[in-house]
Image (cartoon, rainbow, N blue to C red; front, side, top):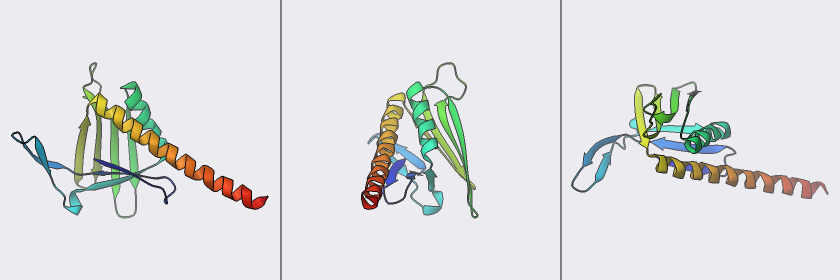
Length: 141
């Protein structure tokens, strides 16, 4: 899973998911399918990021998101796993775009790290918005 923020795109919060196709136990490395048609790219809203942060922080809950464009639809699930378990093992992101499906399990520690990255992206976008407002009002004076 790759997470990015595009400061020139207001609200440009992105994740790219790539499916793992094998694991080498000896070297402890995975091999991933980098074919473009096997990747799932998702642009999230700030509200969706906040929902994910809440789930990571509470280590509880599940959220469902649905994104539709003229050429595709993406279903996203984010929450504890196993789902509805009394003792969850971590946080998981699963996404299905057209016929491609990817499941990304995270430990609670990795969920905390993801939460901090998402907070950082939101803070950066707020600073960018604040600077734009300050410039706007400076020109009005």
